[in-house]
Length: 147
Image (tube, rainbow, N blue to C red; front, side):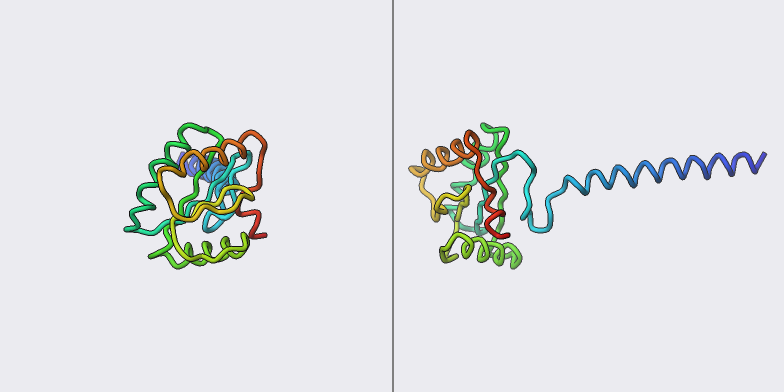
């Protein structure tokens, strides 16, 4: 009887672990790569670089979150650059790829359009228009400029 219980336990354990490993593999394949450089398929992606304590950044965040809620095919990737060295390096690389200097934040990258540096509420219409154009017509992910 103990052998039957032991065999049942081993078979059940093997089934459970085989199910977990394939499930984890599926989740890993759908996860963005390190630093969020690669994006979900089918989404328009905006890269937003900001600094903790930056008032203009804090003012732009709610607007971008509103855009993400308004447009289901939009993904906003946010990178804090002042205290995160990896994000600061990504910002530098992104700026170089777009042919600009990484001078300050907020910095918003949408498709191949000229990056938007700084923020005022009056810029919302321009930002939304660029997002809308990308969703309707397709555009590259800013990460594609890094390749």
